[in-house]
Amino acid sequence: MKYRMKTLALAGSALLLAAGVGAGGAEAASATPTSTRAPAACFDVLHSYSKPSGYGYYPTNGTRLTTTSRCADINISPRAGAYIAVCFHPSSGSEYCNGYTWAPANQYTVVASGVRDGTQFYFAFRSTAASSGGWAA
Image (cartoon, rainbow, N blue to C red; front, side):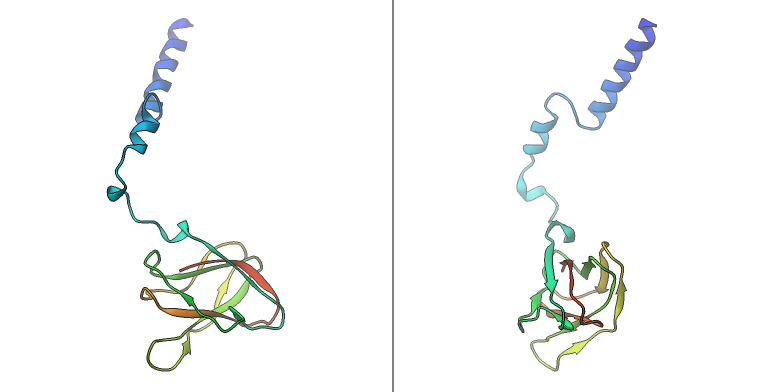
């Protein structure tokens, strides 16, 4: 019995060391220079939104949202499922919207893909009911 317990303890220790946990594991992670870390992922920075009832778009104050280098796509996660489109406000040319996409509740859905960094946009909702949730772009 002692032999089996000792073998299990050694096997467990080996697994922890392989996973980077153990003496000095945390120090090794913090010693990594910032310049060699991977760039931030799209969902590292999430924005919340709250569209009041009576409006078919967000933001409702006439401002535009802007894409970043974090994401190649525009993603939205409404608290209640909704049909949502993205309307683009190009620096030259006319404003245009893509088609509506069904965005299920509480999960991120790509509503526009392959969007350039710095693109100004807003969300268009098929319904004027209140909507809230999060977005990333």
